[in-house]
Image (cartoon, rainbow, N blue to C red; front, side, top):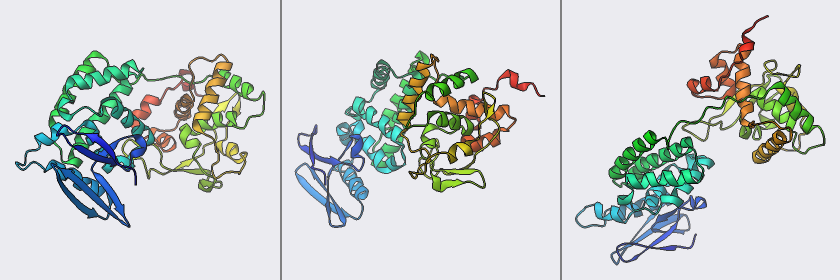
Length: 373
């Protein structure tokens, strides 16, 4: 059990707090929770009166402790309690209920939100405070789309976290709506800039020659071709396993593909198509690329995505290529599928896009491909 932390409270006594199951992202939840054998005991000390209750699950113990604080006022009013709650308390309640569904990236963003405005008392989470948060993120280098995503998370946390903790967050939600309108109008928040960058054949040949100069642990040229031929995300490429490969059917099972609403269980069987991608006059066969990898690990490409991305960026720089990212290879792969005559529903089966409108945004068909022999 984590050692309890002492957190000052406006009422004049110390609230004993302990880390939640999501302690790895640095957010604490109120109440003292102890484990005894297979039971969890929650203990609260309000106005000198100690109360405790035992539960089978830790999250039930934490929820009870929060409810006890919300009901401690003999008059039944909650406003006094809200004055003592911070945004971090709502964040903790949200993570207690929904944290397991969140991606690592989302948890990282929520942690940073907590660092910047988590200690803000709920009554002080005004439109001005939310706009100040947006300015802080802009000063850190975040773009309009990133700031917009951060604000969306704040809205979700206020709405759902408030419901979980049984705390009235209507005032903060109203402040959020006003702040969002102002930030949208000022351009601080906006849609992401749509990238249309695709590698040329000459650039791909240059990268192939660059990586062929010396033997590498990471097969960069194979990874580059595979990324284009399958239109997979880099994280997916480095996660696919030999056990999920169907050689005869030319299929690969991708586990937990990216989904706008769910992190787990988005598994998809994807065809390894041969034909749509031709580089320097040679047709790329993703199955051939797979079969020449060493079977030393469960993963077909057992490499750190960050290492692959960094190596790609360095290779691009060494070749004097401007503004090309590894993710642009996925964009190129999707576009090549359309240029080869595949329909949008067929392309979505390969790329994993849930939103066909988003898939249209990714599509950049080269005009010359419209000429048919």
